[in-house]
Length: 103
Image (cartoon, rainbow, N blue to C red; front, side):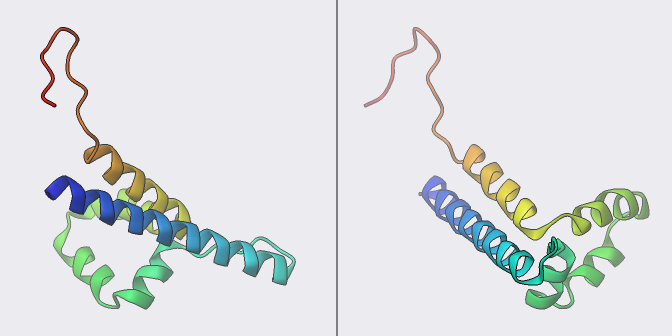
């Protein structure tokens, strides 16, 4: 049951990443130049206080090089990677060769 919930969440996150890619593409075509929405802008618009809460509760060495780099990436890329990671976590395990598989 948990695997099903994680797979549904992964598909929703992938769909959100695709929607962000379409929005960035449309904005780029309309503006005549490449326009990418940073992940930090997406977080600020959807969850206003989350960035400051994470910044206060995380170690400074983790915050400055790691988290700030992640927040500068395009939103569609971060959402796509998160969705693929969730799909990888929720995949079915392939039985080892020679092991009996349950059907």
